[in-house]
Image (spheres, protein in one colour):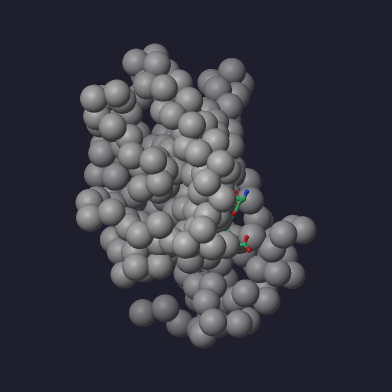
Length: 229
Ligand SMILES: N[C@@H](CCC(=O)N[C@@H](CS)C(=O)NCC(=O)O)C(=O)O
């Protein structure tokens, strides 16, 4: 049972269970074994939205992590913060070794910029106008997703990682590949390694927990959620 006093000192994460970037922070929180109060952004909790608007940089995006006076926005910065202040018992989310850490951060950028944000272009078009999304904008984004898939298919054989180990790479890869596949299917004939890796990521307990928590919201996926996962 969490007391009122505990709540004041406990970490709080502002986000939404269906939000890909929120997953990224939640996966890291799980790996670090940190208890936290989840503060959902929705119409029933205007105070949560107001906190995010006031603390999350120019665009007021979530997730936002609050730990007393420390308020961190940007999902990668949240993962960095957790790794620094609440390091996982097993292995770090970002290797301490300078070069290895740099490579993990580089891949995090690939997943955010080339997969997550590219997928989001199509989602945003359907949010703007689900009947008449901008066809050329969507086609361009889908083509870019294929460039990302092909690149990742070539990269995966070089990615040597213990099977159940989660770093910043997995924190970024799991939500971005989960939703990208819904927008532009990761075809197993064309991208067998990537399809298998996505399935592996979704089976990791901290990721599976996010998938389940998001399930009730699938009807809200602007393109219509596929009948899988
Ligand atoms: N670069 C940011 C992106 C965060 C982001 O785009 N969050 C979305 C939810 S997944 C959001 O806040 N959407 C609402 C909005 O843009 O107002 C991060 O890594 O945290």
